[in-house]
Length: 148
Image (cartoon, rainbow, N blue to C red; front, side):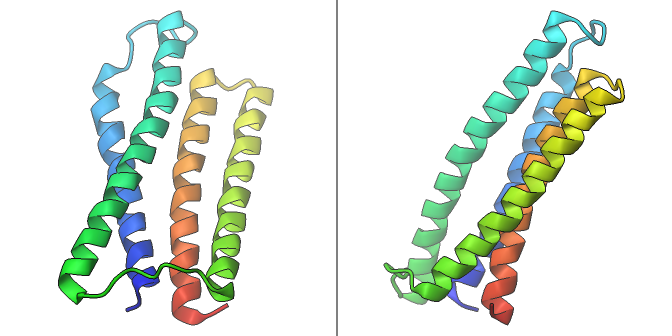
């Protein structure tokens, strides 16, 4: 496997572990109040904000650890440049990831139109962010494995 394939697999596994562990951590903290209470909005707002920060920091740490382990096990340096193929694959992964998130955003806004509780909108937005991250990693892996 190439460096890019391994990195996309590690990124995929990292995204899944970050999301699942954070959801399991935050689930017991769900407020007891009604569906429209201020505590419920505070919970979902902090859920999204903290998940974003935790995800960014964890992805950076995972990338650093991956590069250290890769260097120790293979005695090779990670590639310092990106050729046209790398840029094209990155753009395709970003496009697919963005498409999935925008689709999730539209579904979340549609849930408000059909009078669903606000929790449904937040859950859809959070889940679409997670699925878009997974989609980007899978797209990179697929295109590095199969070609463009």
